[in-house]
Image (cartoon, rainbow, N blue to C red; front, side):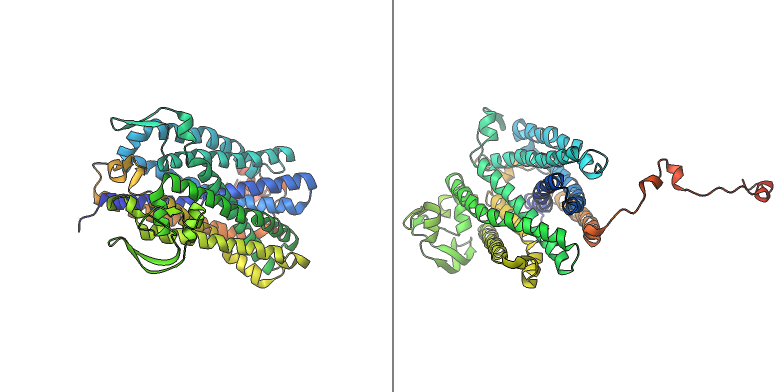
Length: 470
C-alpha cells in the first residue's frame, strides 16, 4: 500500500494541534480566574481567596508548561511538512508569529516567575499586578494566533504574486473579515473551559467535605460567570456562523449537511452524509429551521454543497457531526448554568449530590466542545490552506514521502503520550493535595547554601581524630 504524504501530514498536524489546543484554551481562562482571585484576596484579605489562588496557580503552572512543549512542534511542522506553504506565506505569518513571541511570551516570561514564586516575597500589589500581566499576556498570544488562523480562513490585505503572498495592507490582513468573531468566540470558550474545570474540581472537593468554605466560594463564583457566559457564547456563535455563511458558504453547507442550494431548508438533527452520492441517508430534521437561523426567514436561501466542485468540498461527515457535538455540548452547558441558578435558594448548589456529580463530568465537556469546533473550522476549510488561494496539496513539502510522514507521526504520538502522562501525573498530585497542602518548612531553617542543607551537628571526638576520621 502506497502511503499518501498529504493525508498523513494532515493527520499529523491535526493530531498535534488538537493535543495542543486543549492547554491554551484552559490557561487563558484560568489565568483570568487567578487574576480575579488575587484581586479579591488583595481587597478583602480573606485567606480563602489566597488559598484558592495558590492552588490554581499550581495547576496553571503544569498546564502552561504542557502547552508550551506541545506548541513548539507546530512550528517545526511548517518547515518539515508544509515548506511550500511556509515560503509562500512567510511575508505575513512570519511577522505574526514573531509578534506573539515579542509581545506575549516576553510579557509572560517577565511576570510568570513572580506569580509562581513571588508570594510573600513581593508586596501583595506587585503579586496582583503580575497575575494581571500573565492573564493579559495570554490574551495577546491568542490575538496573534487567532488573527493568523483567521487570515487563512478569510485572507485579506494580500496579493498572490509568483507563488508568494505579498502584504498590501497590514490592517486588513490582521483584522481580516472573520477575525473579530473568531477571536471573541475563542476567548469565550476559554472562559467556559476554565469555569467548568474550576466548578468541577470544586464540586469534587465539596462532595468530600474538603475546604468547604473556599470551594463553596469558588463554585458560586464560577456558576455566576457561567450563567452569563454560556448563553452569550451561543449568541456570539450565531454571529460567527453568519460571518462564515458570508465568507465560507461551502463550510456552512457542510455543517448543515445541505447538498442543494434552496429555501425552507430543514435543520437536520440526524443524518448520515453520503459524499460519494452527494446525499444524506436517514434524515431527521425540523422543517425550515436552518433557513430561519441562517437567513432569519423560513423561506431564506441556504447555500448547498452544489456551489463547489466535488474536489473542493470538505469531508462533510466530519464537519456535520463535529458541529452537532459542539452545539449539543453548548446547550448542555447552558442547562447546568441555569440549574445552578435554580439551586441558589438555600445554597443547594453546594449541597445537591446529583448537581455536584454532574459538574464533575461537565469539567471535560468544554475540551470536547473546543475540539469539535476546531474540527469544524479546520476540516471545513479543506481542501484549502489559504481559503480560495492555496490548496493543501500546493502547500506540501515536495520532497516529503509517505514513510517520512508516518515515521514522524508515530514519533509525535509516542512523545506526546509521555508528555501527557507526566502532566496528568503531576496534576493528580496537585489535586490530591488540594487547598489544604501547606509548606511546613520553617523559613529560618531553609538552607541558604547547597552544603548547609546537610545540617549535621558536629561533635569533636579525639578517638576519631587519632584514627584519621576527621
